[in-house]
Every structure is written in structure tokens, then in C-alpha cells.
Image 1 (tube, helix red, strand yellow):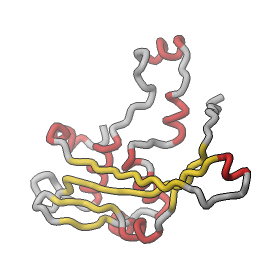
Image 2: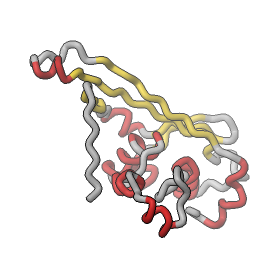
Image 3: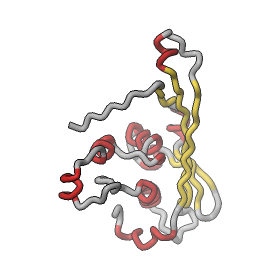
Length: 164
């Protein structure tokens, strides 16, 4: 039902860095100090933190969000009241990350320890299928992705209402 396959000449794989996950997200506070927010600080299991670090920080939602936004027919768009390019599932992941981090750590917008910037990065190895067919993985290209999200003052009115 939601299957969607696109052929590519390359295959990519994330490089899981256990040290980065254990250390956590690099954050900057309102007073200018920096620290890390780890899975222990948030009291969440490591797999959930990995999803936060590797997916939500980079604007990626759960697979169901991607599947629900693919190839909607004209009738489905009409029933849902969606425009031609409007997504079925639209989530402001940046807002959610700030809300979850600050609320969990009991930081309010007027606190000096309020988190105003969150950073994450990871590496990805990219292999060409032709090289893999020859069992040659020595020619892997390494790409690094960086995510930086900053607090927006326009979110302030939403603060007390939660995850809207």
C-alpha cells in the first residue's frame, strides 16, 4: 500500500558513533554556556535517543509520516483538504525538540540555562553498487551531515500550550 522504490546507483549507510550517542546533543544555553544533553539526562532509552539524534534533528519523521505523504491521489488530497504540494503530515520538528529538551530539563524561557541552540552531526558512507558487485568497499565516499537548530522567538506564545 505504501511501497515506494526508487533505483539509485549508490547505497548509503550511517556510521553509528556510540561515543556521540552516549555524550548526547551539543547544546548552547541562553547565558552562552554550552553542554551536552544525554539519554540519561532525558531519562529515555538509547534507541529513542538515537531516533532523536539521527532523525528528528535532521528533520526526519517516523516512516509512517513519509509513507503518508507519498503519492496522494487528487481525491485523497480533496478529502483531507490539502493543496497540491501540501503534506499530509506536517510536523515542526525543531519546535518539538526545543520543547521536549527544555521541558524535560525544567528550563523555562526566562531561565539562563534555557536551551537556545542544538547541534548534531553524523557520518554516512556512500558505496557505488558497481563497486559492491566487485566486493570492493575501499572506494567508499564519506559524507558528514550537520544539523543546527536555533530557538525562534515566534515560538514563545506556544510554550505553555505544549506540542501544538
